[in-house]
Length: 478
Image 1 (cartoon, one colour):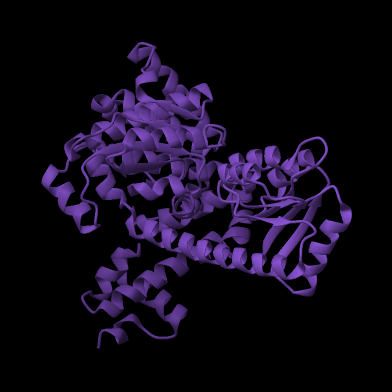
Image 2 (cartoon, helix red, strand yellow):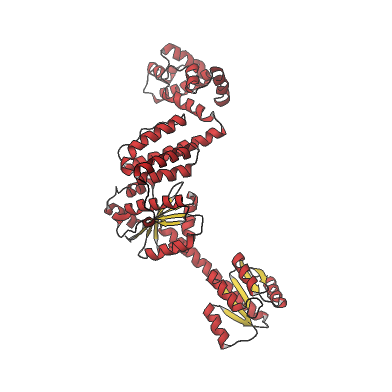
């Protein structure tokens, strides 16, 4: 279904064309204006594909209205309605890019034939647009997390990058890196597929929960960046543009500088910022302390996006000393948010340290949100993890209650709510399930299974096992 705007101060002319459309059952929604100003306003609101404009109208004539409508939408099909046909009028119509004109009073057959031609052209344009979209998707690639991190930190040779991009059909080695905020991960593909700007560039993108890094491969990089600036400056997106690259080995710097530009654009609440306009102003140490505090505040507030954004700023600021900072941040996070799983901090590369920090933020902010909903849910999930990891040890309800910082009686009540049984019954269940799995492996003795599941004496273990399952553990080893 397309939209037809008819602008004519003679009501009967507009009604007659609308009646023709209705009777012919053309796929058109008709809206009508009575003067040029109203036509321009309605065109801006409804984005019609076809516009019929009378030349002589009050407030604003059809030529002026058509000029404004064409400026707003270069693809709109404009048809003029005129009481006379002159060379001067034809020149003006051609200058605007009018499709055709009809001499009033219009003949129904002429209108019908014209609309059919215009509708056929619109259908062809829609098919062409779909082909363009498919072409974009064929050159649009989502980069894996590991490849992107290795590329960002310069851990790939130029030959390795060339092989990767060539396999994707990307042979250009010039372009720019952009960091874009304001897109959900699931919106990334459609965003690049539906915007015509990206059609003249090969794209390789890495989306994450808080930002998308796009590598544009094109020999027209300056022109395309200018178009991006004009197109997205007034949107809700935030775009940071890094230094341009003329070879693949310059991509890591392009990504790093785009990230810095994006961080400053976010801080300054601007939609588009180049790296050259975004150099840091505060001393590094002062800036590091400020960002570290903000990172912790955002994390403890459960704001994943804000925390990740600040983390990127920190990494850009001190990539070579990130390890020592991670030690402090990890300690503070675990101190304020209990029951998080502790993982060793990697000390091999900045790439792995960045991944560790982002994972820490994701898990910590998710925990904050869960705790707001139910302050005991994660505590009892921790009970399950703890039992799995310490099943060969003696574990008592009193000890577990202390670990959760709960009164023993209240702990017992919560066990029935969250574990579905008393703590002792749940512990027996976990031990028996683990024992059964070990026995079925066939590589263990009853004694070794008893020790692995916290039963110091094999005979006692066998009695509990038989009572729980109805058969002896030794029967599984025969």
